[in-house]
Image (cartoon, rainbow, N blue to C red; front, side):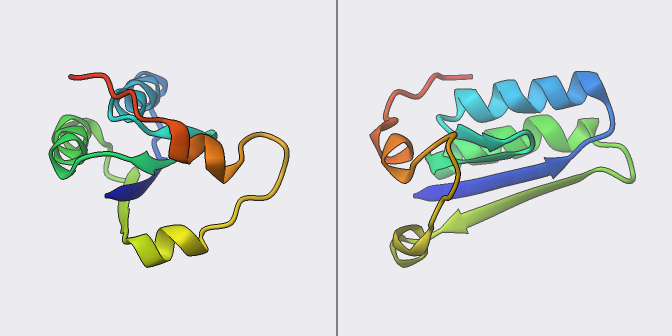
Length: 95
């Protein structure tokens, strides 16, 4: 399954940890606080369980599952990443 993860986290330490968790889940950074790619529901659940206790009251974490139809409709513009790079990333590190 494909996912889009986005967050608004006030703590620098927690934000750096969120980046590490997203990368370990096999996601690719699209923007400073947006990651996307293919991962397993178990890895995404692990990511949520690790981050949720660290969030401050005003922080936000959004986990958006994307089915195949939504993933095919996803378009990216700009020079940083193209969709084919997201589709090629298969190497996933474990927590």
